[in-house]
Amino acid sequence: MKKLLEQFLQNVSTLFTEELFSIASKEISIRDIIQLIVWHLLVIVLARALRNFLKRRLLVRLRIDEGNRETIATIISYIIGTLGILIVLQANGLNVSSLAVVAGGLGVGIGFGLQGITKNFVSGFTLLFERTIKVGDFVEFDGLSGYVTTIALRTTLIRTREGGYVVVPNSNIVDSKVLNWSYDSYIARIHIPVGVDYRSDPVIVTETLLKSAYMEPAVLYEPAPLVILTGFGDSSLNFELRVWVNRIDKEPDIKSSLNFIIEYNLRQQGIKIPFPQRDLWLRNPEVLNPIRLQKKENQATNQLPHQQLTAQPPRPLAIRDLLRQVTYFENFTDLEIRQLIEIGYRKRLRASEILFNEGEPGNAFYIILTGSVEVFVEKIHKYLTTLETGNFFGELALLLGIPRTATVRAIEETMLFVINKKGFEKLLQEQRELSEVIIQELGKHQEELAQRQQELRKLGLVNQEEDDKNPVVWVRKRLHNLFGL
Image (cartoon, rainbow, N blue to C red; front, side):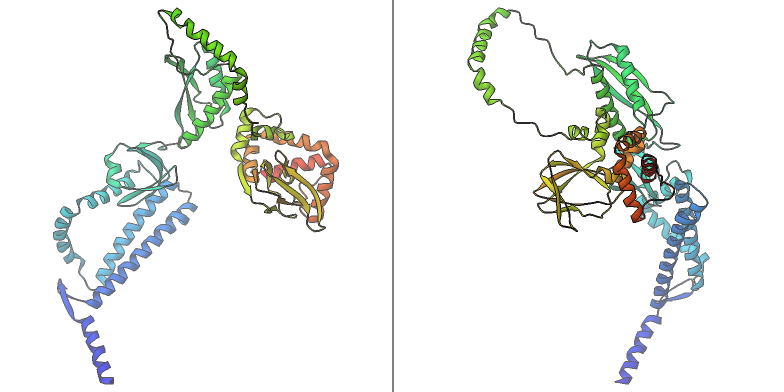
């Protein structure tokens, strides 16, 4: 048995060391091939690790921008990888100079068979060296738009606005007309068409559109917005608002915001946006008189039943109206209310589901859209109140960042409108004056504020920097610290 095992091992050893073929007087065996494969894989892994180290660490510390980091790291990693492969071949006894002749012969045949791949590789080097398109750029071509995330030798990876990734062969980019929106900056101009009633004063329309432009934070003051009368439509005077924005990649969001602002301001000025219409002229209008008389009689006869049939059900509560019931938001304009609605979201609770427990962080404000909830103190088993459709709660805990003082549980299936801390922080950043409105409103309840302040002191949640004997001063400092104002 021992001899059989030794014979088997000897045969295996012979199999791995026996010459398969020779290259430039160098005998090649299976063992040599395995060693070359392992060394080549090791070189590739090290080259990729080097690329990631350069791109994410070393070049970041040198404060090189993202596009340059990608280019430098890619080129260096490919150079080091190529040198590593040549060293591996030389170390394994293969004469690199003699292999050049063989590689040249094979290159001609491979070039014909792999023209597409070769073209993509050359295009990849072109993109990396010319740098007309860099990682991080926002580009548009062939009906596709998105952010360049990776430029490799064969393909470029583009992330669309919707979050999908598109792999594009480099030759397609080099051979196509590519619109690089962020070649030197993200600043660009967008056009907003607006049609108004013919009875509108063009000067007032111009003033209103310019006012709307300056109400959008993304619009630049220089170059200044411009309003152009583009023509006379069938049913409207056609204007165009042209604005320069700081982030052209956010164009859909900016356009939507501008359209909301324009509609609101036109409505405030009493300027109507007409709908397409046609005037119909009758050559013999007297022919319709009998029909008109009959129609009036039918309307008089069926008036009461018609009213009963068309009785409308009560309108559901609108979030806009509910938000205006909150003291801090009661003086908000429609535009500010719209922003508030945008940052909020809806949350559904099943019957008996707990929304939050006492002692948990107060990081959200709630309005009940449908259903009802009960509020109770679980530690002492004390019922406090029931909140129903239209009621709101949690605003003080959110504003002051204090723990919940009670537990809230759904009595039935309930739908809530929620504004969390992140959304409210965004609102305060955009509406700086809102913080002062909140402070003034909270200042009307100084006794409650003092009590809350004392509770937070006991819990060790009041910083010495923000603590103050005056509750209003304390609230101002706390709001600034909580929401980064």
